[in-house]
Image (tube, rainbow, N blue to C red):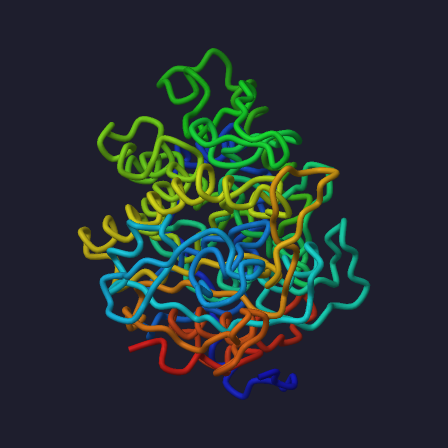
Length: 494
């Protein structure tokens, strides 16, 4: 349900300022080296958007939003139609889960065994079949097209991403940035930067922190190096695809008790300060500096990023590939205190299965996803974090009911874009597991019962974090922008 904008009556009472601990000269030196971290320098303004601060009264302290760029077909994953004609049902069979009456795809066996931990919403719908606009819809939680929208270039008039909203209205924990996106920005192989993943009307100050661990690539897709593929050609291996992690260290010798010259030291600090102060006031610089110091000095935080050196058995559980490493990093970041982690699983819209859909889902996309998400759920449960971490998984849209064959490009059939309905996956964070909410019709084309919107999905995320319905973020002119645009999905949360 869309809500008209109104000035939230309690917005003024929610406004707060940050209190910062005293920062030593040593810490200032460390902050001066933050540009060497391997984190995006656009993140310099991430913490500036926190005009409203709330303490969490919801069950969740953190969100992990797993975004399947390209669009996962509902018929082939979580909403199979075994009684439909062959051109609709596809090639996969349903299997029973640990919850009687709930069936999912045979190629997701690990998730099937863990159904008591998760719930499905099979009736999520929005009006767009366009990749860019649908990305914007599902990353911002708003189906309304923003003014001056461009499909190939983010605009300052775009709605802010959910990551940006959470970053703006939740209190940072352990002096860490409240919202992080990994392992890459969403940039299509054509060079099209996907709108909806940035601060939008918040300005660049509202951007989440982007951890650039995955290199931009215009050729291959998927969970490299184990499950790398090309939509037309099948299995591929591109040696240029290497998962990297931020090097959270200082220049050699920078913290030695004796420096060669103080001039070199001051130049290092001042260069970084000038770069940051282009977009930040001194107070906001202090906030960013403090977060940077935490990234540099806290061993637990540095270890969160260092997934490539995690124990072998942990890497094997998640999968030694970009999907597994990304979800392992996300799990460690929420444990360290990050409130919202968006994990983009699939470069170049990897889930855009117009052709060869069934072998590619079976061989390249489902195995690393099933393994990594199952490991994430186990890890969160075993560490006591599942109840306080809401996991959400969705793409920008579903896929068409009927399969089609584009013989000029692919040998086998696939499905096209379809905003009419998709299945969204929820786990932890207060979710009542072992249930299905809503349904699609017999062809898997439109909601048949309890239709849900992206606005409702976003409201569920915000509510799980304890963000009150009256909350707003404030722009530079101190104008409030209402956060909730829909209602919490009924029956999903316990």
